[in-house]
Amino acid sequence: MKNLLTAIDAIIPFLIDRNWSVVYCPPTLGDFICSDNPVSLHWVEDKDRGIYSSPGYGLMGTKVSIPLSSRVMLLGRFEQVHPVSGIIPSRRTLAILNSYTGMFCDRFIFSCKNDFFLVYCKE
View 1 (tube, rainbow, N blue to C red):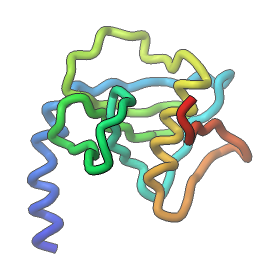
View 2 (cartoon, one colour; view 1 turned 90 degrees about the horizontal axis):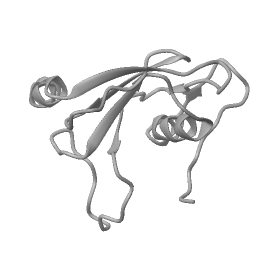
View 3 (cartoon, one colour; view 1 turned 90 degrees about the vertical axis):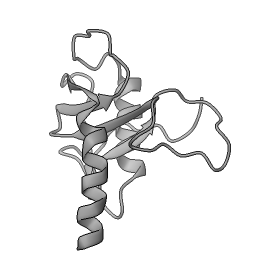
Protein backbone atom coordinates (compact mmCIF):
# COMPACT_ATOMS: atom_id res chain seq x y z
CA MET A 1 0.00 0.00 0.00
CA LYS A 2 2.88 2.35 0.78
CA ASN A 3 4.29 1.86 -2.75
CA LEU A 4 0.94 2.72 -4.31
CA LEU A 5 0.64 5.93 -2.29
CA THR A 6 4.22 6.87 -3.22
CA ALA A 7 3.45 6.30 -6.91
CA ILE A 8 0.27 8.40 -6.70
CA ASP A 9 2.16 11.21 -4.96
CA ALA A 10 4.77 11.12 -7.75
CA ILE A 11 2.21 11.30 -10.61
CA ILE A 12 -0.20 13.93 -9.20
CA PRO A 13 2.03 16.98 -9.91
CA PHE A 14 2.31 15.93 -13.57
CA LEU A 15 -1.45 15.58 -13.86
CA ILE A 16 -2.02 18.98 -12.27
CA ASP A 17 0.44 20.65 -14.68
CA ARG A 18 -1.43 19.43 -17.77
CA ASN A 19 -3.87 21.58 -19.71
CA TRP A 20 -7.17 19.72 -19.50
CA SER A 21 -9.99 19.76 -22.05
CA VAL A 22 -13.43 18.22 -21.94
CA VAL A 23 -14.50 16.92 -25.35
CA TYR A 24 -17.93 15.84 -26.51
CA CYS A 25 -18.82 13.18 -29.09
CA PRO A 26 -22.10 13.80 -30.96
CA PRO A 27 -24.45 10.80 -31.23
CA THR A 28 -24.16 10.93 -35.03
CA LEU A 29 -20.48 9.87 -34.83
CA GLY A 30 -20.73 7.04 -32.29
CA ASP A 31 -19.79 6.50 -28.66
CA PHE A 32 -16.71 6.54 -26.49
CA ILE A 33 -15.91 3.18 -24.97
CA CYS A 34 -14.68 2.53 -21.45
CA SER A 35 -12.63 -0.32 -20.02
CA ASP A 36 -11.49 -1.85 -16.76
CA ASN A 37 -8.37 0.36 -17.08
CA PRO A 38 -9.78 3.56 -18.62
CA VAL A 39 -6.90 6.01 -18.14
CA SER A 40 -4.58 5.92 -21.15
CA LEU A 41 -1.28 7.67 -21.71
CA HIS A 42 -0.09 8.06 -25.29
CA TRP A 43 2.05 10.18 -27.57
CA VAL A 44 0.47 13.24 -29.21
CA GLU A 45 2.43 12.67 -32.42
CA ASP A 46 2.58 9.20 -33.95
CA LYS A 47 6.18 8.59 -35.06
CA ASP A 48 8.83 5.91 -34.70
CA ARG A 49 10.65 6.39 -31.39
CA GLY A 50 12.40 3.03 -31.21
CA ILE A 51 11.59 -0.12 -29.33
CA TYR A 52 12.44 1.18 -25.84
CA SER A 53 10.51 4.44 -26.01
CA SER A 54 7.22 4.70 -24.17
CA PRO A 55 5.26 7.73 -22.99
CA GLY A 56 5.57 8.86 -19.39
CA TYR A 57 3.34 11.03 -17.22
CA GLY A 58 6.09 13.65 -16.96
CA LEU A 59 7.04 13.79 -20.66
CA MET A 60 6.15 16.57 -23.08
CA GLY A 61 4.38 15.42 -26.23
CA THR A 62 2.09 13.04 -24.33
CA LYS A 63 -1.66 13.03 -23.82
CA VAL A 64 -3.77 11.47 -21.07
CA SER A 65 -7.29 10.45 -22.03
CA ILE A 66 -10.05 9.41 -19.65
CA PRO A 67 -13.57 8.55 -20.89
CA LEU A 68 -16.14 9.96 -18.47
CA SER A 69 -19.24 8.71 -20.30
CA SER A 70 -20.27 7.51 -23.76
CA ARG A 71 -20.37 11.18 -24.86
CA VAL A 72 -17.68 12.92 -22.77
CA MET A 73 -13.90 12.44 -22.50
CA LEU A 74 -11.21 14.27 -20.54
CA LEU A 75 -7.94 15.01 -22.39
CA GLY A 76 -4.80 16.42 -20.78
CA ARG A 77 -1.49 17.53 -22.29
CA PHE A 78 1.37 19.82 -21.27
CA GLU A 79 1.47 21.87 -24.45
CA GLN A 80 -0.89 24.81 -24.73
CA VAL A 81 -3.90 23.63 -26.68
CA HIS A 82 -5.49 26.01 -29.17
CA PRO A 83 -9.07 26.82 -28.25
CA VAL A 84 -11.30 24.25 -29.90
CA SER A 85 -15.00 23.69 -29.91
CA GLY A 86 -14.63 20.64 -27.66
CA ILE A 87 -16.52 18.50 -30.15
CA ILE A 88 -14.93 15.40 -31.70
CA PRO A 89 -14.69 16.28 -35.42
CA SER A 90 -14.77 12.87 -37.09
CA ARG A 91 -15.28 9.13 -36.70
CA ARG A 92 -11.55 8.69 -37.27
CA THR A 93 -10.75 10.84 -34.22
CA LEU A 94 -13.34 8.89 -32.21
CA ALA A 95 -11.79 5.60 -33.37
CA ILE A 96 -8.29 6.74 -32.37
CA LEU A 97 -9.42 7.81 -28.89
CA ASN A 98 -11.38 4.57 -28.45
CA SER A 99 -8.32 2.60 -29.55
CA TYR A 100 -6.24 4.15 -26.79
CA THR A 101 -8.88 3.16 -24.24
CA GLY A 102 -9.14 -0.36 -25.65
CA MET A 103 -5.38 -0.81 -25.97
CA PHE A 104 -4.83 -0.42 -22.23
CA CYS A 105 -7.71 -2.61 -21.03
CA ASP A 106 -6.92 -5.61 -18.88
CA ARG A 107 -9.93 -7.81 -19.64
CA PHE A 108 -13.08 -5.83 -20.43
CA ILE A 109 -14.27 -3.12 -22.80
CA PHE A 110 -17.62 -1.50 -22.13
CA SER A 111 -19.94 0.24 -24.57
CA CYS A 112 -23.59 1.19 -24.52
CA LYS A 113 -23.83 -0.12 -28.12
CA ASN A 114 -23.07 -3.52 -29.63
CA ASP A 115 -20.53 -2.00 -32.01
CA PHE A 116 -18.02 0.84 -31.81
CA PHE A 117 -15.14 2.34 -33.80
CA LEU A 118 -11.50 1.34 -33.21
CA VAL A 119 -8.25 1.76 -35.15
CA TYR A 120 -5.46 -0.64 -34.25
CA CYS A 121 -3.18 -0.34 -37.26
CA LYS A 122 -1.29 2.42 -39.00
CA GLU A 123 -2.76 3.63 -42.25
